[in-house]
Image 1 (spheres, rainbow, N blue to C red):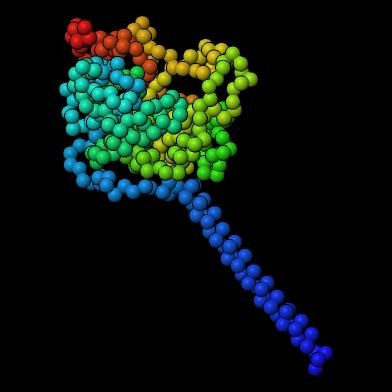
Image 2 (cartoon, rainbow, N blue to C red):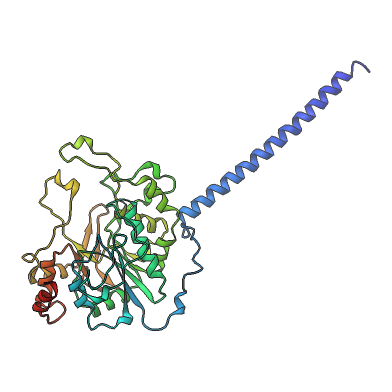
Length: 381
């Protein structure tokens, strides 16, 4: 019996080992299942239709809570004042105020009143929670989000048009209202960023490279897509952390950094691509911008829009802009024919960048009807 004791102990140890191994295997399988579930959930969260988990919006008014006509919310993103306020005042004149609302993001503390503005349409329309904006960085898109957030508080606001302080309308209010309201889609200039190397690998895996988009900052949104942007708590923090603007020395091209990211040219486009709503967009902007095509290769690294002056904003030039019927996107070999609900339409309702002289010429040429320039001169004096 004494000789059998070691065998019994060995058998016991083997059994204990097998039980331990079984336990380790079960735990490992359980962990793998958890990891796979987490990866699946992350993929659904980042790439599916519910990519952006909404923050609490219980205080936001319901769309069905309003009565009357739907409104266009005009969102002005300005440096300080609104230099073309006289033109926009004429645009809104004799228009039913139930059809539009106005929101302005200016520098903190700036107030629009009779001492700073020539049109009463803008009095008191500035945001009280505005921030200091730095060109090209996340503060720019944060200001856009603040404008959208404020406008969403009015359930009657069904379309949201983002404009700069140098934008002008190319048509009267009635035409623009009917054009925008007739389309169930947002107008967001969005295309593959194939040439410029602005995507930073540090954005992965939250922002997949295949979802990276580029386009014009000047967007027109339906309410659903405005809510996606305001409720985003996934993509914006990554832009805030990673997407920076590098100071460049144009005389020293070797000092250019590869990942020079301009937030306002990528954020909305990329967010909506990740939200799988590109099929709900007209992938073009309603705001015309003219770029200096004659610039040298070195100058093109810091392209800026051409500024329209009194001399260059004549009737023929404006007619040419209004006659544009399609836009070609070379990175996607895509021609975007401009339509509203399958009906051919002019591509652009607005244009930038216009000087005060150019805006005065638009009024003098009767873009909104008859105009008395003397009243404006007296107002400005």
